[in-house]
Image (tube, rainbow, N blue to C red; front, side):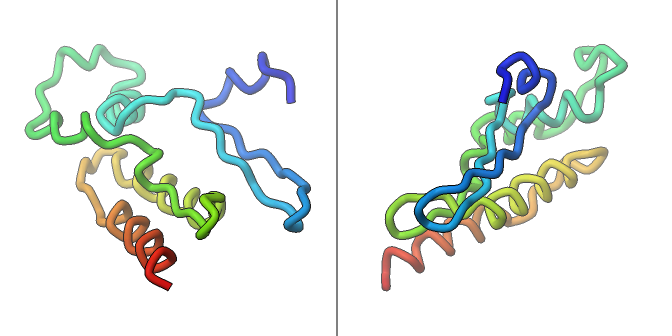
Length: 115
């Protein structure tokens, strides 16, 4: 896919046909943390510095990559990962509540390591 087209979107889903039967790659073009996403989603037509949001700093240390679920060999499970990532972003719209999507991703990853 053309890099210029990719950069017009916050994230891109790419279908990849590989030796395992195929997968979906998720490319996050913003690379930001949840605080950045919160501000982009809620203040896109306003100056975010004009608003004070309590406990917003708690979102600084959380990245979308933290919601990634992987196979035992380290290959991301793309649809489950995307589900956790998108659900968390949708919850940030006018509702900066953190749902335990990250904990679910960690649970899936740790279960794979224990078996």
